[in-house]
Amino acid sequence: MELISELKATREHFDWKLVGSKQLLRGFRRDGESRMSLAPIRALCLARSGRIFEDGSHVDAGQTIGLSPSDCSDIIDAADNRLQEGSDASMPLDPYKEWLRRQLIFAVGLNSSSNRNTVWNTILTKSLFLL
Image (cartoon, rainbow, N blue to C red):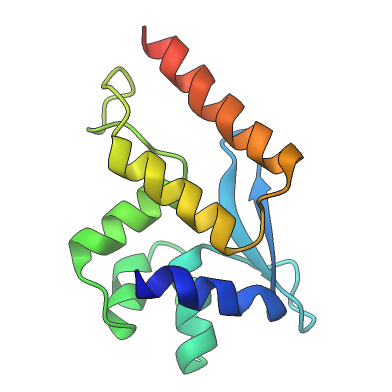
């Protein structure tokens, strides 16, 4: 996936973190605007085009960098830790979104054992909650 390789290249421009209790994947700019967090699609759009899209404009940002609306939706869900197959939290986890989330997290360099444990604990907790 081209997006994954491009995210790897953003490491020099962004500090990536898992934020809050929902463990949202967000990049914080290293150029002084560190308080502004960007989801992966918005960060890539900024890195590629220099444009910053507002929160909630992920699909517009994604289309600017050549992503389809369905790809944007999957990436947003994976970055925001919404891994269910539907919008209902009682639905089973979507294996593709789980895989995509792992790829995004590893691409931005959050693959230390502590972060890996956090990611897996979050996935396991959600899985057990759904049982």
